[in-house]
Image (cartoon, rainbow, N blue to C red; front, side):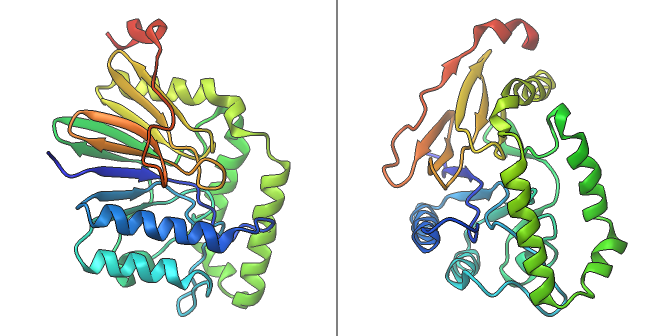
Length: 259
């Protein structure tokens, strides 16, 4: 049997208003350790932290246990990939150079056996996200990032966390646009991908369309769901039970689009 490949997203460690931060952090650590011991390859599909910003000499000083776990597992040979989400746009060199992770700042293609999966955090895909796409260009502009670093870290990080919380409180629920995310998935599946995996909406889903997979990973705030791919078996599971969290729904009405 091939080694398992895991995908999970949207843990949002450090989110204001959540009282179980330490408990969720320990769940993630045990999850990572368990699957690392089973020779898994692991993809963190964005938003592991509520906010991440790297200064040249400073990083956020919380959740050292989780950072140490990532470093230890990567040093021991576990392949851990980190994909940038909308809450961690400012990942730079720390995750790759210090922790030893494979960092992907954009969507990526993942080959598992003879199958290919398109993997993206999912932010900016919906049509209503036009305002966010504009802001993302501003937030990731190299000049703007450099200017922001002139703020003292205690001030810069506090401002960013506050902005993140305001955005979360005022935004429409992303699962309300599920049909638009599915449309984006159908485009990639029609291009020849065997699966489309995303996070962002916090709403776990598994659909099979013309023998191909559309997966929304859910989150680690309410659902504790993740995708496991072993050989030809694609499953949306729950931690810590490791049982199927969502049985796949067969959507035959879209089959003609992929033929």
